[in-house]
Length: 170
Image (cartoon, rainbow, N blue to C red; front, side, top):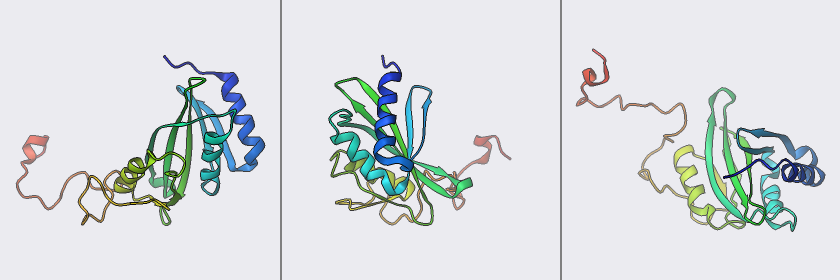
């Protein structure tokens, strides 16, 4: 079972603040792990540092997923990283305006990010600049919407075959 390692967490925060200063917007323990918010402009450099630095050694990308903040008109990406040597996990977050949803690809750091970035593009519309093959992988190519954004309609309003009584409606 994973345990919060406050000494290791503090080391990570100190190193990142020392190297990147104001680019580290926030750090906090959220439920089960350290969560660090990084500016969009510095996300690639921070992730590369966490991977390449001998003290950090976060050489495993556990997951990458999108988020939608309609009230702020932003899209975000969360990266979960794992240092197997210390058995230490952290969460890195960044966001971008929905009007310009572009972030750098991290496939050059973790090749496994390829499919995760494609899925995030497919469902949220976040474009990963420099990605080797950014295209839809689960939805139809003709689809123009992004179904995990909170403004996506939950039901197809054009369907005539649905029975509203099955949904408790008249």
